[in-house]
Structures are given as structure tokens and as C-alpha cells.
Length: 310
Picture 1 (cartoon, rainbow, N blue to C red):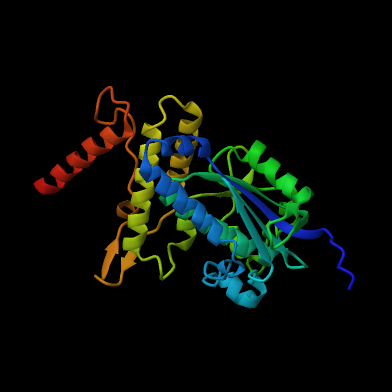
Picture 2 (cartoon, rainbow, N blue to C red; picture 1 turned 120 degrees about the horizontal axis):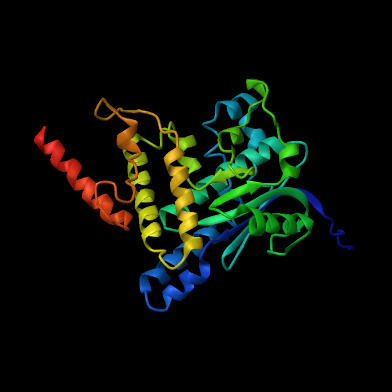
């Protein structure tokens, strides 16, 4: 029986890279907890090689997806994922439904980014649309992969996934009417340097109204991330390039639009300021201080004392 000829297919192509992977590997030589962390992260990414992982969990809550029909956003039988070392390649077959396919892919990638950040792992990537061969055995090649890799390597710079101009032209931009809205519109931002994409925190802004993300859980996760950022800022005295990435992500944290929440368990309104706590800056109440963590501790104790005095 003659084998079917292999052909390029038009697909969405994402190339994602773990930032600081070499440093993490170096740390594993002397810190067993880093070995466990790295192993858990790589296993987590490996788990996404199963097509069923790319489901509709993070799209089905979107009104625009419900209006257009959830089945049109299903990418489970159209997705291939291959992880190797510190990178992951994800491709999604596209017919005439690039807006729907991009919506589900972006929502899932945003979730992966949030999970990794909670584990103190920064990532960045490129997302494009082009010709590629990506087999279930992990074989992957084509111009689409090269373009996504170059986006990640040359343009992403910070902990974010950015979209190629080619892909943006395929999507529904500019958005003129509400009926033309797709779930990815909530994730994508135009950053100060002109590129379009989403960072590792955007997931929380989009999903804050989800029933699986009550105020208590959202507060806990943002507190965890805030701690990760403080630790990263204070642990990069000899690495200005690393500090720059954490400072950039801190700025994105501060820009997150988090709304007041209602706690149905206690019937209490929770202020947005209590859900997303602010960062304290250098020398803010502590003279000549260079550690975010020390300023944080000082200001927190000062706040506690004020609350006791009330």
C-alpha cells in the first residue's frame, strides 16, 4: 500500500521557551529542591502532549464563544504538542476558523503561563500562522516553526507570548462590532514597544469572574505571584538582564485590572485593593534600602500596627 505523501499544513504555531533554564540547571547541582521543581515543570509541560488537555475549560465561560457555538472552538483533535528540554512547540490545524482556534490556544497558553509563574518559572514565546509538519511522534519542521522561534528569540524579550504580524492580519482586527468579538480579545494587549501579545499574568484578569476563581483563591494566587516577583527582584543583583524581566512583569502586575469581588460564602464584599496588594518601592518608609523584601516586611508590620490601633 502506497504511503500518503507528507505535506505542509497551515497551522497556528507556538514556540515557548523557559527563561533562565541554564541558571536553574546550575542551581540543581547544589539545591535538591531545584531538581524537584525542574522535574515537576518539565513533567507538567510533557503532560500537554496529550491532545485532550487542550480542551474548552478556559473558553466556555466566554459569552462570545457561547454565542458562536462552543463546538467551533474545540481544538482537541487538531492539536499537536512536543516538549523538549526547556522548550515546547504547539501547533493547531486551521481551516477557515483561525479566530476560534486562536481563541482556545491562547486561553490555554495563558493558563500554562500562570501555572509556571506560580512555580517561579518565567517563559516567553512566539505565536504565528504558517506551513509546518508536526507529527504525533514529535517530528516538527517548517517555516512556521522558524518564524515562531525567531519571534521568541528576537522580539518577545520579556515574559510574554507575542503574535506575528502575519497572524494578526488573519484575526479579527481591528474589532469594530461586539458581535465580531472572540475570546482572545480579552487576552491580547498592545505593549509599549509596539508588539501584540499576552503576559504570564493576563490569565487572572480574564478569569477573575470564573466560578472556579473565587475571591479567596484569586487573592491567594496573586499573593503567591507577588512573592515570586519580590524574590526574583531581590535575587538578581548580578544579573541586570534578569532584573529587567522581573521589573517588567512587576509593571504588568500593577496594571492588572482586578475588580471588587463578592464572597458568597461570607456574604462580604472584598475590595480590589485587598485582592491585588500593591508593591512597596525602594526607600518607601525605609531609608537607603535596596531589598524589596525588607521594604515589604517593614511596610506590612507598619500596616498591621495601624490596624491594631483602630
